[in-house]
Length: 165
Image (cartoon, rainbow, N blue to C red):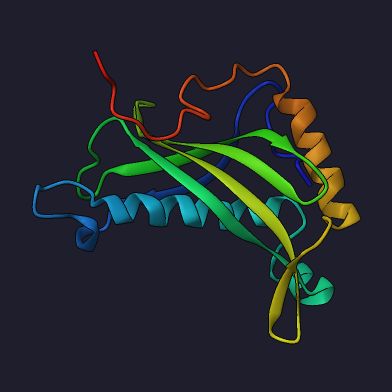
């Protein structure tokens, strides 16, 4: 599943361009658009770990976002090329915590999103937590091995707080 992953490097997931309707009153990408780009990146991650559309339908399983934290480092402008890379920070039998970073065409970091994602079984219109499928767990284990030597992002796990002097 993770055949395209580079050893000891974050997983390249998603590329897009800043759309004109993503631009806000300050002349740069709106905060909601950053969340949209990160959400679409998680969709791409799902495809890479055995939770693509066909697998979700076949297994009746998907994932839900439990938590999302956004960090903004630099503004993105209209028509700017964007790329998102993912680092798997940790996972267990039902959850994963990922670190997604958004870069411009020069490789400058624009934003990051830390997310906790939950495996869910969808039945009778209800969702309940469920263990990952064998295929997804194998893909997560493989990705964790690839990312084991990566440095832990310093902002990961920081939460929200106002710095006091």
